[in-house]
Image (cartoon, rainbow, N blue to C red; front, side, top):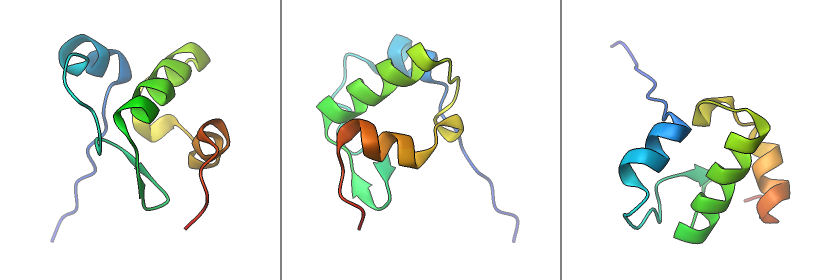
Length: 70
């Protein structure tokens, strides 16, 4: 079976889905992010120059959002 990886364009997410509740849209190390955390992460990632969610190192998100590793 072929496995496909889907990535999210961060600027596209802001353009097309930003009005929606984004809770659970992303997870990091098994932790589902809240709407507020998703927004903070996406804004931060765009500022850092990341284009896709797959470009963002999870350890940086853990540090940014002060998440506990599972």
